[in-house]
Image (cartoon, rainbow, N blue to C red):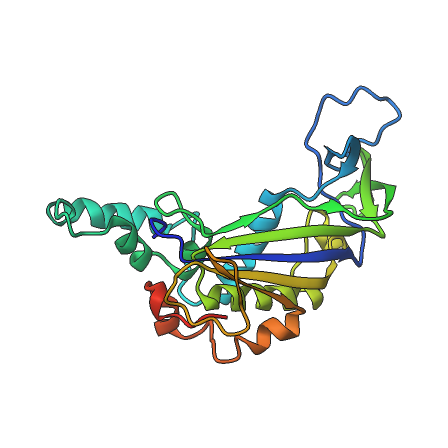
Length: 277
């Protein structure tokens, strides 16, 4: 499925905090006695230690939402596509010896819609999430919390802790896709809408209202590498044809004929038959 590079897309956008955001660093070797018990994850960016939303965390949130939206998505913990595909390949070992047989294409056909985009242990992912760093000013806050005894309803003794969070921040995000279908982009737009509605949240302590975000300043760059592509409004760069699309509404207007609930659309595996953006 990746032997030939047919198209690429980069979607850039910003996530603005609506409520405080808490993504725990996971470090237990805190040497500063004045530091909070649970600190926000940080990395160096341009020589400065800044808070970060890891690409792995973003991908996990997007995949979890995609599995809810896409019909027929597998349960990666109980009945993952990879397990079923391996069983079918073992039973078809003779067929796999055929030189004309494409393992990648067959695995793609047998995968659920979510695994077709996000990948599995037998199928490479088509989507990549970069770490998101804040742009402009932001604030680091801290708050004390205490565990509540389920029986008495009072504070549990010795359960007081303090944690750090980020607020009033804008994170610059980027998602890359290779050999994408148009329904992949439509799915991402649906997830963006659910983020704006507060139905998709990020980080920890979400049951306490943390992690609500808004998507803003979305733009998309699409490239097609096939010489046979009739690319209207695209700029010919010689090796590929490229177009910039500004705004989520503009992207959705190009996808108004695409449905993520259409089984035939989700089952398609030949990029040559998919329309260009």
